[in-house]
Length: 331
Ligand SMILES: C[S@@+](CC[C@H](N)C(=O)[O-])C[C@H]1O[C@@H](n2cnc3c(N)ncnc32)[C@H](O)[C@@H]1O
Ligand code: SF4
Image (cartoon, rainbow, N blue to C red; front, side):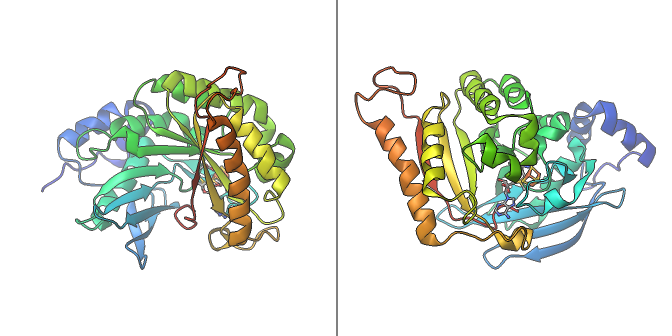
């Protein structure tokens, strides 16, 4: 199919500032097949999918990962970047060591889907998008929201329930996201990683500007605004946040959420961040024990006739634990 040529560089810059996404929609309607970014290299993964190294028009580079899921109905997930680098500085994350080098425009976020679609096998079409590549999506709020709003349209054809925004939290923006999509919006994943502010601060330095109590209030408000579940992500790092007492504190914290939450425990993956701060992944036994303790809190709240966190008998299920061993799926 012959595509419409992109405007000259100067015009494209203007588009990025104030005309997206309506201008982008126009381009899509006319058969937009040219991208401002290009794939420099594709590293295929053994199990299907792979990692793309992209170059933006200003020469900066980002990564996009295509993950193929096997099964009776194979499908693919695209793990997109929202920024070049990240300023949040999480102590276990490779991107955090880069600092923030630039924001991606809505168009550059969407282009990652175009590229990924080209590499996805036709037997495993792209169905899901996760904002789990480089960057903090809520620190590039407007461009991310503009891109997400286009995803169900035209060539993308993605259901918003299959789009997940992962965040460490930025003051006021989880609540704003809830107001933006009160019904049938994208999923929210909160990178929690610690059950107390004291422990979270060194792992997620940006927590200084958003204390845990306030963060959890935003999550509760998000739950109320959207009626959606929130996925809590917890990277388990041996001897850092993996103790039994951490598991109990986490169980308490989640059981006291008003929002419905699921917990995704992810063993720390040194291959994606390199050896940093002497961090080690936990053993399988440590993972199982941690999960078992947190799950006990779920059972406690699940028991019929039990008082919930708000003291009301028969409160709904407050915490569902989903066990995951998918390091490498994320960066
Ligand atoms: C790279 S971040 C991007 C999205 C957003 N900034 C966030 O932190 O949620 C996506 C996920 O990758 C996880 N991650 C980063 N470094 C990791 C590592 N070394 N091992 C396992 N997961 C890691 C993060 O904790 C987060 O849950
Ligand atoms: S984990 Fe997310 S927020 Fe933290 S440094 Fe990495 S990309 Fe940024």
